[in-house]
Length: 367
Image (cartoon, rainbow, N blue to C red; front, side, top):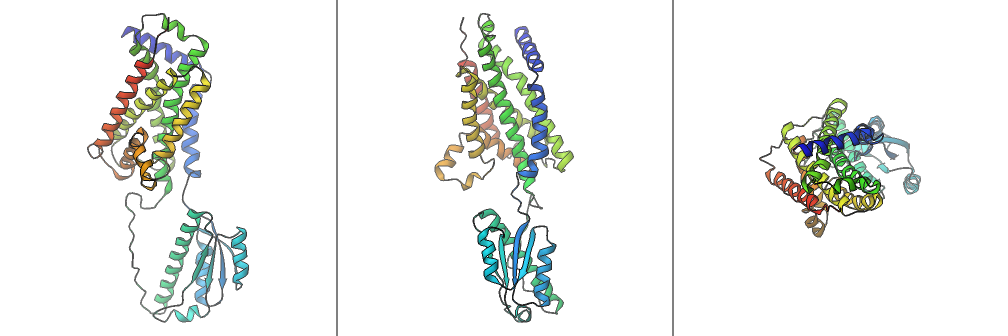
């Protein structure tokens, strides 16, 4: 234990004497949590809409006013020339064209009012699809209001939607737990690897190789500081999520920290493994970057695993971030407990044991 304590003191001194690492461990999480939730969003706003109003009635003007007043749309113009509006759609200056047919207002008193047509730009499939849905809902709400003002029974909506766990459908609430995971992947994976390979390149690790320090003591001394840094970074990120965005976990903090601790063990062990098999900083960075890209793109961090091909879904079972992502979102948004997610916790614990054991055994002392 005394040997481990001396090694830990050496690691912490080395970390804090570095002019770059302490600043990065503090500023990087702050920048990610303060900037990225605003820019990494799937919420579609400012959809450019051109209205072709062939009716010029109070009903059509009500729809135009609704579109112009909405935060989701930018009204590009109102005309009665569909071909001109279609050319703007083809040029990319308009995202959707809404065409209101003749006698639309008069037909509202009939059982089957005339249909409004929407032409959306499908190049950006997400923006086109969601923008079209927003327009459909806006027109349907306007028609219901107009029929109600005329004493007519509003046509019932055949679908009733209830958004559970994220009632406002804020994409930010979905992404903030993912950003915390990305921070732990980058800081707790890259930093131990770069630290260890840096010692190889400077030659200081040779001083350890000629001492009676065991493989496990040396590996623990390399990992424990980054376990502490990872938990500190998570605490900072959660505090910023609460202070800036008002997002707090519905479930218990203990469930979050238990999962985070297991995942930090996994990533720090993985970083040491990468360093043990690398001779230079460049090799470590390219190797870590390769696996981190796989973790981010295939673990459900940005896109749902269920949307992937069957062969890709099978691969994700061997990626530790998949389990941590499921835990974080379930605890943060749904209030799930450790018992509810015991399979995911068990998988993370298994990865943590395997990776840290591999990290210790792959370190070879060379005298």
